[in-house]
Length: 81
Image (cartoon, rainbow, N blue to C red; front, top):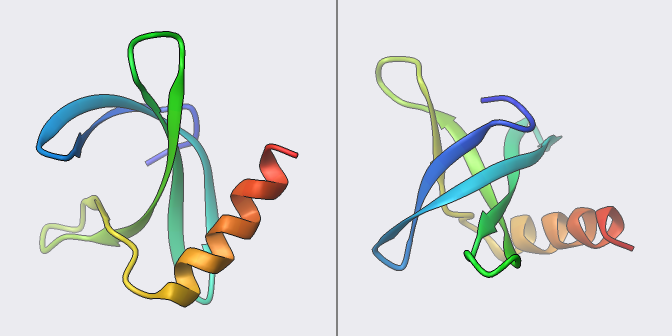
């Protein structure tokens, strides 16, 4: 995965276009900060953990802990302040 790459991501059971705005490393893990196109010239921001699947391909998964969420919220807030 690369910054500025457009990917398909599932949100609430619906496939959406998302752009990877930034890839960050935190505590030996990589995270993607994505903008999800809502189709009305607005976007939601989503942070996901990047893991490798069994074939070695990047896969996005939900954040697992409140600590991850809080740290990434700080990063996202700094990006848009």
